[in-house]
Image (cartoon, rainbow over all chains, first blue to last red; front, side, top):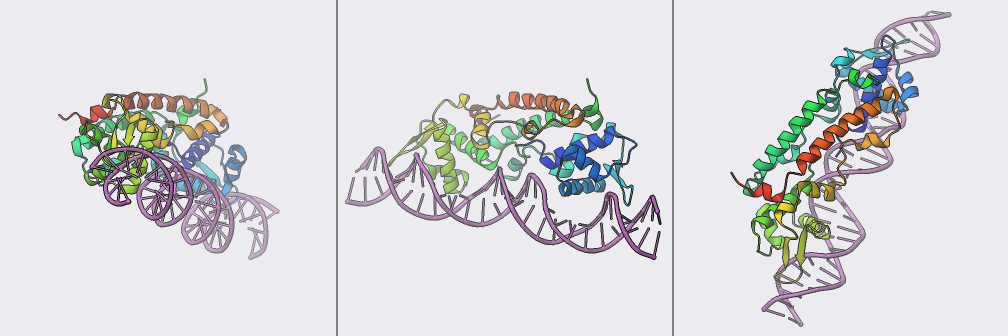
Length: 134
Length: 134
DNA sequence: GACAAATGATACAAATATGGTATCATTTCT
DNA sequence: AGAAATGATACCATATTTGTATCATTTGTC
């Protein structure tokens, strides 16, 4: 029952670190050293972020990664979608046939409300907002 | 990213059905017929519910299950705890070492807030409340 | 042009969680 | 005694998560 899986978490850290070193080309090696994430796994994650338009990659010597858009416009929800699929808290109930006692409808309504709330909250979490210290 | 796994869902249905047939001894066979849940799996679930004080079981011929307490006092959150462990949306982040940029603290605060809200909502969902038709 | 340093693509693998089966023992009613 | 129920428990299949490994490609530097 994790809201955030490991790859999403790693991706989040990587993006935060890259954002904190804005204007610097960041190779995978730098992130491995700083964040202590297994290198091949991190590389795969960075490639995924690139493919999904969250990072821009530069090949060759002196290459690496930079944010593809401002840190204010990268949301935790984006990462969850990329690594964990569309956000559906109550997925398994949708697919199943109707229950006796109209349980399904009532329960679905309630879980939907919870889901909406979580989505609203997640939409407020950006890379930029995680960097602000206080 | 499921809030409710299959066994929790099955347990919920079983409890609803038993609650709807209050004062009737309900054997596993009756639930299998009514709810279309694989028998051995359901049996295991019922045993777990018994061990955790949500059902009372009666052995022998004419035996079966009945609610161990009023449907108003059985919460979805109880089932989630029994089948999915303690409710912790942001579990994986807790365990990990501090991140650079105080990311962890900020993120943890926010996920905690979301978690609290979800918990509050889940505490309002009882077996009884799912039975009410409207 | 050769070489080194970077990413791209992709296949494979280990560990864990989920969903489910199977079996035998025990209790209880008739 | 026998049938109908649950208790306990070991096992198994599948999917998901969390990685690893390998080779190809691009690009800057000497």
